[in-house]
Image 1 (cartoon, rainbow, N blue to C red):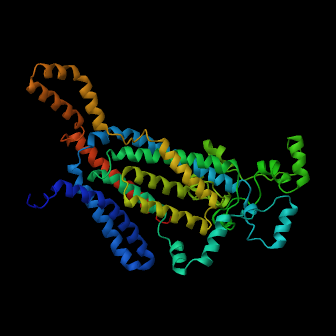
Image 2: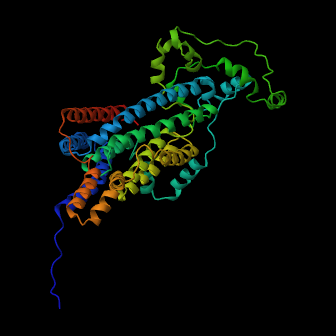
Image 3: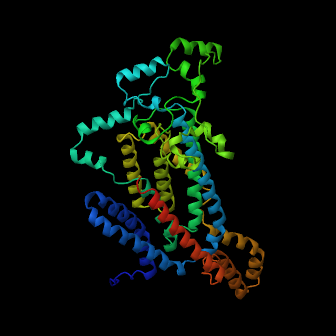
Length: 457
């Protein structure tokens, strides 16, 4: 009969790896929880939030000297920069498109709910219909649930638990976790995939909402945020206004397939001197009160005041959740997806978007992330290198085995093992240290800027 003996103690490396694996999810939930304290206890939030970010930054910097994948990061630096430039270009195009769809029909088209009945009648006589919000069954469902669910649940659904800047910061934490081997290296490769996918999503979004102009779920938004002319652009005066509400005119337009109505007097826009950028005047429609710079107009575009199909906030949330699920997984990924759904219902509840905007953003984000896997693959690169090396030395290894030359066999197998770990050796060269320092500094700067610019959601 065998005597019972206690199981062997776990190796320290296994324990450390387990702690690393759970630490990222704990840090992420701690960040979201601490930031929500701004609503529960502002004074406590002011103390805890800087402390949390300081601890996370110091821990990340402390791990830099022990990181073994700087050669892989160096190879990903160029794709990372290219993806960032592509994303910035896409955001610029999106800002131009947002201003255009708000300005092209004029403020009177947006002001349905702010008009008195008499004013609406005057506008209708001019041939330009005002734009009430579209009927949205998702909004109806949430209002019905407010009557059926317990008040505590309703308050949780209404709570501003997570916003745009939270999802951006969660991805930053995910990318930085390569320093602790929680996520497959290189972190810059993961960042390049995230920004490249984001850029494609933003371009598709801009093309979508420019194609058909939809009224905002918040009709007062445009007059509160924009100073565009009240009347339509000359293009809209010719091609939209005569056929906006007259059924007979629409039928005639379909029959003739030509803009047959002659506009008696076209109202001309203000045209400042923008030099080589004057071609933007027809798209941005500047007012004299908005200054002489086209760049200032784009900064004011923000999220726009039309319905922008699909939701940009939800695209960011879904891409963060997809990156988290693929790179890290675990229970924390499920929590991220719950936060995505919470954010989606809040977008609809607060009428920042229609339900269709959130639904489309979710499946577009998932599909786009799946399509860009070639930038940051999850395949085992070390295993592929071992197989390549083994294929090269296969004949020599077989010959050594036939000759019973065990020393040669050991040397050949050692070469295979070294080939799989060539990126895991910490580099001591000055250039690599400069690259690592510059990478950490620039990335922390991006984190700080992203947190500052998106802190208001």
